[in-house]
Image (cartoon, rainbow, N blue to C red):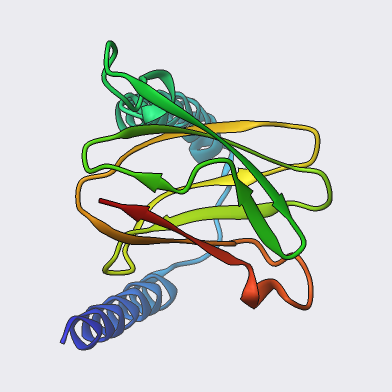
Length: 173
């Protein structure tokens, strides 16, 4: 339904644009000297350019102001369980795989070989958290387990021929 509406809107816009171009082409007259027009519109073009840049800066700042990168992803004062994760071709080694509902876990994810994705899926196979495992670097992300069940950890970055088998499980009771 939405695709059909977008298609009709696009088609209408194309037809409208063709009509405007046709009208301009057929209603134009003999060529005239453009010097007065150039002088008058260069100033307008400069003002328009500055206004456009200012508008885009305002829109960019407004839309990026709530990025989560500057805020902690867990509540301060809550006990955090640190878990070391080492990714390798083709698996994950976690120093802890059993948790309780409500636990906030700090995953410290790294690898020694190639870049891997570390994606945590809840029992319904909905992605609830992810980060990258990069050689010689440790990425940290926090996850609070909200429901009991078996959580799947899957690699989200193609890392070789057996990438599709790169998974492990965590149990939340």
